[in-house]
Structures are given as C-alpha cells and as structure tokens.
Length: 368
Image (tube, rainbow, N blue to C red; front, side, top):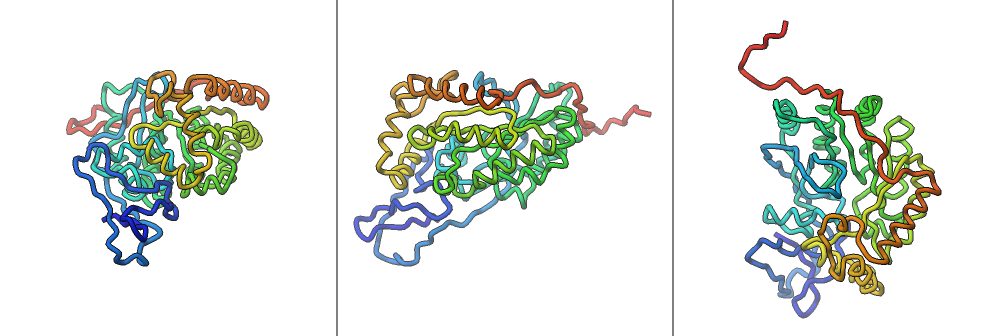
C-alpha cells in the first residue's frame, strides 16, 4: 500500500517531498498495464506519514556477475549486491531497473530493497568455472554497494572476502563511508594492485546534498573517506557525478580541488543522465525544490542531449555533446592539470595473481 499525502481539494497528490526521500511520487513502472490514481476522499488527512517504511527481501539470483560490452564503461564485469538504493538520490539512473520487477522507480526504488542471497557461494561457483577469464569486477555500477543496509546485511563484505581469497582485481564506486569498514581487506588487495576505489561527490553544499541525496553521506564525510583510503594505501579518486547544469556544474573546480587536497590520485566526471522514468521524476523534483531554475536546468540538459532530455548513444551518454558539454570537458581537464589529478585511473589492475576457488565436484581430487 502506498501512502500519498493529498491536497485539501481536487484529489491530487501533494507535491511536497517526503522526509528522507529523493523521489516526490511513486509512479507505475513503464511495463505496468494498470495505473493507480490517488483520490482525496477527505478522510485521515492528518494521519499521513512524512516517511515510508523500508522492506528488505532476498533476491534469489542464479548468478551474480553481469557483463557488458559498452565502450563508455572501463570494465566488462560487475556485481550489484543490492537492487534498489536507500540513498534515495533523485537523479539515479538505476531507478528504472525496479520496473523489471513490477515496482515503481519512485518511492519503491528507495524503500523496497533486495539483496543478493548466498552471494559468496554463487560468486565462488562462477569464478571456479573452467572457462572463466579474470578481469576486474566493478561493485557499484548500478546501485551503491555501501548503502545503509550493508551495515546489517554485509553482502558487499561477503563479495570482498571471496575476491580477496582468490586475489581477484576489483573496482568500487560508492557514496558510502562504510567502505572504511573494509580497510583490512582493501589494504591487502591494494598491496598487490588489485583494487581501486572511486568516491562519488556531486556537491559540496550540505543543503543541496540533503535535498538531492537525502540518505547519502555528507560531502565532508566522503572527502574524509578519500583521505582515509589513500592514507591506508588504497588508491582512490573522485567521480564528479552527475554534473547537473545550472545546479551543480559551477562546483566542478571546487570539488576537484577538495579531492586533490584529500589525496585523491585521479578524477572523472559524468553529466546528468535521465533514462526512461527518471526524466519525469527528476523534473518533478526540480519543480518541488528549485522551481525558479527548473526550466533553465532542463534547457541546458536538452542542449547537451541533441535537443532531447536523454541521449543513450555510446560516446555521448556519459559526457553529452554541444557547446555546454564541451565547456564542461575543457573546465574539467584544465582543473585536473592544475591540481595534478589523473583524468581517470592511470594504469590497469593486476590480473595475473588470480587463483580460482576449488570447484564443487563429486570427483575425488588427485592432489597429494
């Protein structure tokens, strides 16, 4: 059951945001044939909740490693420990994935969370396959591996333990400072050039962060995580992502300067992406929080997306195109040169140390 706050008259949903949530509403996914329309009948208007309960259920996957051949992504293998994300970032490009399980990319994405069950056993089974070829596995390509429920579920920790035992290289992308909990494993992997961590920072403004990424760590805490990782010998950098025109783009240089001061060795950036249902959700968020600049933001988005609100083409979806996108690109590279930051992680991770786990088989071993 969805709890919608209603206006006093007219039967339409109240556009005010719920506390701790990035989405303003809970629209049906694009594959749903039926739609629910909220109607105000005048009852229980004073009992509407300002927040929504969170549910956590197992995702009974038969495999955990996903592969891709995108030229825009610097890895071919990834693992997503969770489906959905409690960080509740209003712009998250992963929101439409909830439509595949009959849920909404709005509030459902933030509150109906799924974790990979038996992830350690499944991962060992896949790594033990005779035809498996080692290449870095990314954690965090879709939803955050260190979102708040990781503290209790420890799915990411289970994955790290398997990869550390097998000496398998990996990369991590996160907004969560819980990554520091795993410094023991990350430090072991770093000594053999088997890991790199990217911390995503969108803004240094705490108020904007609170509205845009309500459950994610503060900008200051993320910068301290960069510092702690590098001091522990774990190579890390910063993703200025997403860059939102007329809202966060003016902070690009200051974010990069703060990252360099925290010891980051590299940086990269990604411009705002609005696939599928995210377009409507993001515009709804803009109208609720920044109505005076909403049209200007979307006008610049369309300028970077060949007149559309989203451009999924390889080669342009991460950086955009046109004069404004070119300006961002130049600003980024000039700032990185001035600050001594690599533009993207320099060098590859070690793959030659990989030791596959022993495959489960009824055959007796011939090892002496």
